[in-house]
Length: 318
Ligand code: ADP
Ligand code: MG
Image 1 (cartoon, rainbow, N blue to C red):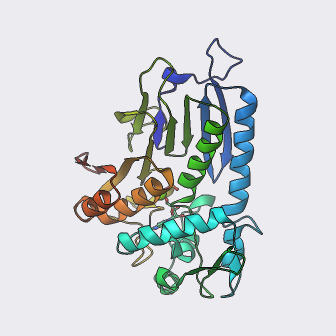
Image 2 (image 1 turned 180 degrees about the horizontal axis):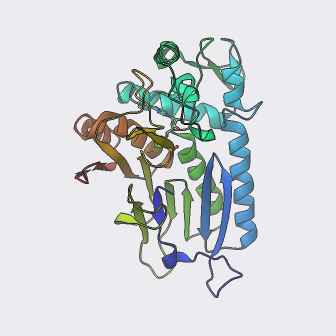
């Protein structure tokens, strides 16, 4: 996990293994391990994992028949999508424009060439990446509505969209809404680096969220700890997905101008906000932009951002 919840604070083992009143569930969705810990009946958390699975089936680019799969296989034809997908696409468009194109869901064809999710360590050909980037003009994604008010999306034939930089945040928000609706007042969701806190801890103190040390043992070594209460903390980093070859780190956050992993001296960006979907997209965008250009974007969306450089220097936008 890129963001570590300090589970000794909150209970790691679930209700059955100790006297803690917390329940914990873990599930693997969105190509990542997810944990939900909450002060509630375990059945509520089981339903929360069902919700995660449903959202995965709706938003994954690899699940046949998902909204994203349908868009990517429509060969330029309009596709009616769910209101969830439409909301995400509208937010993605907003962050794309505000970030000057740094956040771009249309990098899907380039992203697919890297095969980051199947353990491949093959560097794509320059020409293939250039061809994929030629098909990634986000301004050619058309968002509209049909006569019944349902969202309709049209992307050019050849373009592939990939919601990997924003969907987990949206899902975390929705699952948190579900839990709140069930009366849950204390919970911590960690969706592979997207943390959402409902309330604080029952003793009135905030949750403690550790930020993964990029060079340390995954899930066990953090370089900073942030307090979090009714808020979200999202990290994008070079260390979670990717591979090392000839001393170079090839990671999954791509420069939309050329399709190569961003190499700008950053190892992670953490965003502290109230909307996890926007925080997710912004963390990816700010990673691509870097702290200097990213400052205005963080201000525009009224979020705090922490940039960690390879040389361990920290830049903080409160
Ligand atoms: P994580 O998926 O680990 O939470 P991010 O939120 O930073 O990390 O998203 C990275 C994912 O977003 C990539 O795996 C890819 O699917 C997609 N992506 C890569 N580069 C970009 C980009 N410049 N803009 C938008 N999405 C991107
Ligand atoms: Mg993101």
